[in-house]
Amino acid sequence: MAESKSAKLLVEGKEVDLPILTPTAGPEVIDIRKLYGQGDVFTYDPGFTSTASCDSTITYIDGDKGELWYRGYPIEQLAAESHYLEVCYLLLYGELPTETQLTDFENRVTRHTMVHEQMHNFFRGFRRDAHPMATMVGVVGAMSAFYHDSVDINDPLQREIASIRLIAKMPTIAAMAYKYSIGQPFVYPRNDLSYAANFLHMCFSVPAETYNVNPALARAMDRIFTLHADHEQNASTSTVRLAGSSGANPFACIAAGIACLWGPAHGGANQAALEMLRQIGSVDRIPEYIAKAKDKSDPFKLMGFGHRVYKNFDPRAKVMKESADEVLDLLGVHNNPTLQVAKELEKIALEDEYFIEKKLYPNVDFYSGIILEAMGFPTSMFTPIFALSRTVGWISQWKEMIADPQNKIGRPRQLYIGSPRRDYIDIVKR
Image (tube, rainbow, N blue to C red; front, side, top):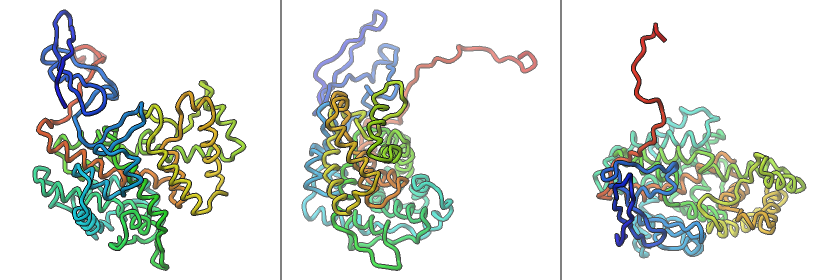
């Protein structure tokens, strides 16, 4: 990041000189940190869509070109050539690991997958019909009550231990939330399985019989984890950073991220996409719903198409489509009416001029919902799976923020439009 030139802002006749910062990639950034001190004004940017809240070396997105990089590596290459735990190492430490480093990292994660036995009692405090995300928010937040030796954010070793614990235990917690919601016994993690295979085993095995994880399904799940591992300064990541800026412990920060991710406009998008497919119901009703989507006066929206950031195409969607095709072929679920609607809607969207003109391509949420449905997950588990995928991104961003010498508690300003100053009126005179 270089400071090479400046922008001049005229505020009521007073000139304010603002440095322009040049990033590795992306648009230049006007540094407004001294604007209030020099010009006595704030900037107004609801949603912070034009404001950089931090500098970061982790993830880069170019929405116009449809690019997503983790530490400079294109997501397509990582999804094709790498696997989730290697990507976790990359996000956490900045470089791809050597064979020795990866083996050590995988061993450390694998040996932290079990949760404290007393946490089982914590799960049983929830109602059986509680949404798994509600359970996860509570359980992850409560981890600070079980792991006191990794809550000191000023100790680099404790930060490292907390990071490994969260990555390792999140699949176990998500699987336990699922098992609890369907009334089945908890399944303990197995050290002989891969990260993704272990998660599937904890979700779908039962004590009464042997369950063998299909390697193709484990690979598809691993890809889902990889493609969702980080996504720059999105709402949940910004929430983690904002919570962390106060000095909150890492478990509380990640719980805050999970709570934010739960929102239907964020992590719930793949669930919304699948529910839309169910609403359409059958292939013969697709034209009716496409007409509704094109009608500006109709509130119906096609979920799973287009993206707020990617104005061309979602680079994760192509990889996810390949996985979706593989999983559907493997499981032979083509007679499922929801999946039939998905395949036909995808075909139309890629050929219809309206979709092409508005660049409404199927996105990663569209395909991930199809895969998870085919695997047998209920829609209530889609967002928990997103949360466990994104945990490494949240932790990487949190660790970067803690180590940043410029770090200070987040304190956005506001444009106050309420009543001017007024005096209190006694209740008998009102």
